Structure formats: C-alpha cells, structure tokens
Image 1 (tube, rainbow, N blue to C red):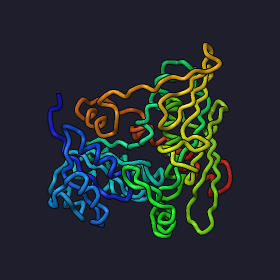
Image 2: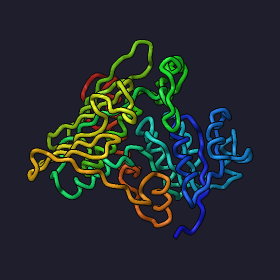
Image 3: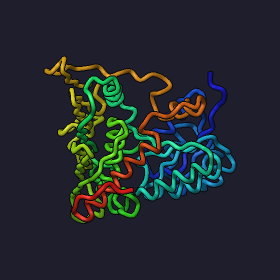
Image 4: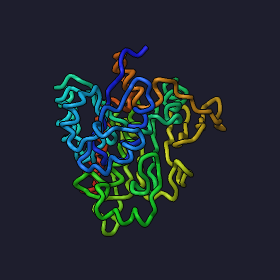
Length: 361
C-alpha cells in the first residue's frame, strides 16, 4: 500500500525526455505533477496541454516553483553542461532528484552533484532509458545467473538519426527542420555538453559497467569524427582496456539510417556481451535476446522478461525505493554512474589529445 501521494515537479525542458517522464508521473496512481518550470514558457505548452495542468502550476522561475509547490521529488532535464548547476540550485530545497541522462558534462561536475545531494540528506538517481528496456534487463539476469560465466567483453553500438529528429513521445521532426536547428540547438554546442559522445557513451559504459559487475577499466582510447561546420561529434568509438587485458568497445552515432524504435538500423543498436562461457546479443526494443552457451553452442532465442511493477520505469521504481528504502537498480545509482563518467571523461580526453589515456579520477 502506498502511504502518500508524491508531489513531483519538472524543472527545465532542455531535454525532450521531460515530456516522457512527466507522462509517467501523470499515469502513476500515487503521484501528481505539482508544477513545471522553464524560463521559456513556450517549451512547456505541450506538457501543460497533455497533462491538463492549470496555469497556477506553470512557472518561469524554478525557485518560485519549488517554494510554492513544496514537492517531494524534482525531475531535472537541463542541458548536460548545466546538470551540476541545477542540482546545486535545487538540492537545498530538500527534494529528492531524478536527473535525466547523461550524468554530467564532466567527472568534476558529477562529483559536485553527489556532494550537493549528500549535504541535502536526500537521494539522487540518474535515469538511463536503456535501463528500462526488457532485453537489457533480461541480459543482466542471465549474466547474474552465471549462464555465460564472467563477462570479458561488452560491444555497444547505439544512437538514432539525431536528437533534433524527434521530440517528446518520439514525435518526428523533418530532416529539413532538424538541419536548421543545428545552428542554435544546445545539442550541437560544445559548452552545453552537446555531441553524440556525451549523449550516448554514458549509456553504454554505465550499463557495460553494470554487466561487468562494477569493474572499471584501466585505460581508454577514443576517436571521434569531425563534421564540417559543427562544434561537436556525431560519431565516436571508444575502446576500454581492463586490468586482465580484456577489451570492450563502445560506439555512439547520431545519423543512423533509421531510428531503432521504428526500424533497427544496421549495425543494430544495443549490446553484444561476451562471457567466458557464452555470449548474449541484446538489442534495443526487441522482444527476445540471443544466448549462446556451452549447452547451446548453436545459440537460442530467449523471450525477454516482462518487467514487474513497480520496476517498469524510473518514476515508479524511484518512488518505490523511496517508500521502502530499497536500493535502486545499478544504472540509476550515482556510485555506478560515476564509473561510467570516469570512462566518458577519459574518452573525451583521449579524443582531444589523440592518444590512449589512463582512466581518469
């Protein structure tokens, strides 16, 4: 039994996933959208309409929103480069925080966020949408059961046609309109934390670290493309080497031929996980994974698990953990996410300096 109705606010609409997260709040039987806030009121119009929010729940000053609504939880979706700033501004209001991926623009920013929340006495989680994909959760279960032995390689390829080709609820934007927005969108600004590497590498290395049992690599090598006229990358390839000599590869791409939620592009988006005694291919949005083991060397299809309530999405999972005191699943845990951020920072440094670097931090 739920003991309360959770008051939740959505602050900053830089990331289109705010609309998706607010929908989860709207649909939760024991949560309500107490308010939304963004300096640009036009960015909140769709959410206000979709969730039937009265005008007194819509703010252009997030501080006033926090002061007047006194929420339990704040969902934050600012540009990556502003994550630390927003967490430091919001945490003192004594609210739990759900920060939309990625963790931060840098390891230093991630540590600022961790400190700010520790000082508030509340909890923070980082939401990686891939953590709610049944194929990847099923893969983690099979790994934990020992079916493929110790994980020795993680191969990751993920992305989409580009962040400007869709808005909340995966509503499509034309290629022509997306091309026009590149000149001003934060997604394409280095200072704001734009680029496919910062957008998607965190997914791969955070879940990869989860699959790896929390082990961190010792060194990282990364290269990125250099699109003419753009400040940021649209394609990156990162190789992580571990103390035992094993390698894992993580590739990010804005500009896939199709979006994986409509038609899987080639290469497919998702993971191939290699263990000492077997392998798993786990692709985004698919209803089965492919498992190869010593008992089934020819490999076999395994239907994905049906995720049980209250562990089907970030809102119901986080609220359940707040009510029960249970730990959140690995990819949401800032401690595990920090290892992912170390790898991301190392990859950024490697790409900039065009050399292999020891794991930073």
